[in-house]
Image (tube, rainbow, N blue to C red; front, side, top):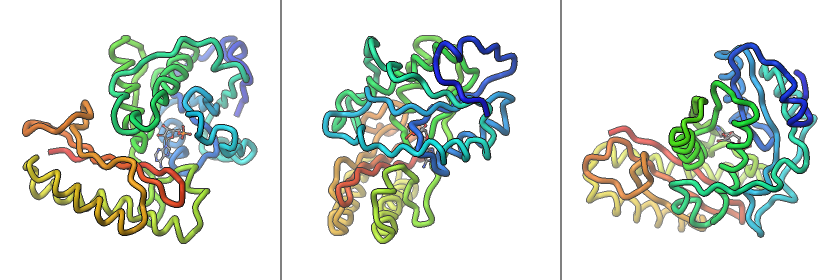
Length: 273
Ligand code: AMP
């Protein structure tokens, strides 16, 4: 795997094949590797980036102590078939005009006000430099991939945005770099986040009458609070626009963010009606 240390170096490479791009912040786990693995199986050239994007962290968030595990990450990327690793220079996020995305004022955007501006601004820079044929994201960050898909479509950017399923621990907990902050016991307990939204999904599948959604949600909130989760949000929305579902909504999203022992965890399930 060739390591590229600057945008200049990246620009000097003549890629002849179709390129798949996987942007990450490092501290790679099986969730990230599912994207790299899919890319390497389906595209001749795979470029992965590791960049801890300062623009997407709020003042009190974990930017300075975000886990940095480059050696281990390089090994994993080589094992899973990434051809290039792009490590942007320190000033990559400087002097950029922040982009204001659509769909950013709800769910995670409500408690992390400028988060998606930062995400989209950097992804847009990556896309304009790399010009990948396809760029891969995880459905774990549902709102993120929706925002990027919408932006790419509206701006007619010639990159296909592909979203792949959430990879989970055996307990059901969605894999995340933040899981490392939890004890083994806490990780097991946090499997409850997925089982709770799965239960809502099952209820919606057997009664897709939107009048019942509030009661499914209220019951789930009660359960979660009993289990010591601090709720940021638990929402049942139309998956295409993140607004209140209508009777003719075709796809529903159950999205959740909670804190457990001060660690913020997110998850979601899509339901096709
Ligand atoms: P991050 O390093 O957190 O920015 O994540 C990089 C990419 O990996 C994003 O597209 C995430 O949605 C994706 N990702 C993170 N965790 C998972 C997971 N558990 N399953 C699938 N994709 C994931």
